[in-house]
Image (cartoon, rainbow, N blue to C red; front, side, top):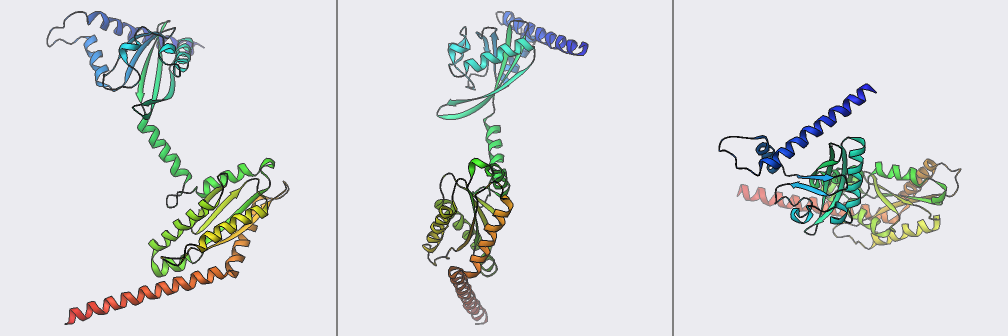
Length: 341
């Protein structure tokens, strides 16, 4: 308790010192300063002008008493229009949030931090507001533009949940969603496992760039063939998983048919896309979701071994590889002949 009182006393003393500096600056700005002589008010004003933040002093009822900022910063509002007005009157959307932060800072005599978005010049920007009490009836707020930080956070969040090559969700996110879908209200829960046919052959004969193009093409087909409520993800390598909540097995098979038909329509130029698919459905709560997942995977492998489209893809890939190798040999022969001539 004594330590807590000491902490609050120290914070209050800091409030008093900052308030004294601000008041001193108010009085000093009415007089001219002597060249070469620096005052506390000048130093404080220089700090305010150098930092690209907005400083606002509020009264307890949210009235803008003082605003200090670089005029070009455009961080919050028009300074001239806000002075002497309550924050709830200046901004109907942000006013209540600001007023709550003001009251909380005064009540707890501690720092309160909030984040809020603003549409400025047609662009959504994000700000951090830090409210700190001054004495018993005033609060100073520092508003900082944190748009770049928020964009970086969103980018990192995207990367943690998505596969960079295809733009689909990655396996980690899919496993989390699988646990979330594994509840009674999402039953029947169907799972489709898909595998790109002949990917290793393409990588070994035509190169990984061709193989990557095949993966991307397959991902686009699966995404376009599914419904908005379905979750399509890259399971790993040449495998994909599709989670279909509240979907009967027959309806999941219809989605498999849509994927196969879309693959058949890709033709052989530059390469045909062939995806082996397996589907399984959890209909009751007593079924283990891992068993359903394995069943879908087993069905996919069975279809891969017995599919005519798979054999067609292998033949096409081999023909393309042989043609490419033949072209390379002709080019090498021509080069050697030219060198020896």
